[in-house]
Image 1 (cartoon, rainbow, N blue to C red):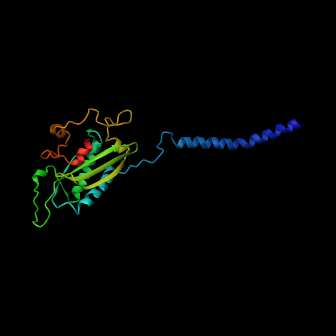
Image 2: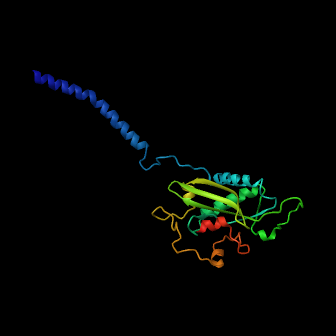
Image 3: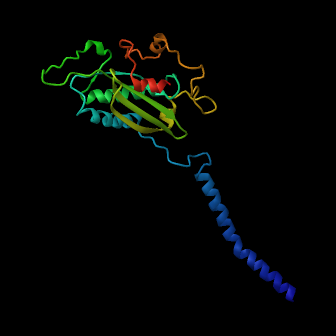
Length: 225
């Protein structure tokens, strides 16, 4: 009789816990179905590249307003990956956006500063200063670390600069030469030191920023070291 009672109690216990197990299994299946295991664990920053670069350009141009004489010509050098002469679409677009925004702020962004006079239009005002815009960047696992500056051509003095980050997302990845392993090659200059000859340096200058009398801005020089 006692054994029969034990069997009845065991059967009742199993019937009680069975619905709970079924609900738990259903909840687990529903969760797995709604949350793919291949989805992004963190939200991806999809801020447009132009918006980020315009803000950086605003910071740079804001520093120039009080110190750069009116009419000072600013030539442009394409931004570079640190430690490499590799040119990318990301660098070209970022450079153009920053330069465009600085021009929108009323500064003289030019292709050839030799055509601009260094004499002041106002005899009592300061003479224009020939300058250049240059920048560099490093690609990290999640962010691209940017820096850019406007320096004088005569002595390399930095008149305005800014550091900022760009998210490494779908739009920026499409502008960088990633290989099948997920890295950029070459991240460093694997061909040895850059030649010291003027011809070698000229070959890496963008077409819209020609060399001016063999003068190389210090900021750009540091980028290529």
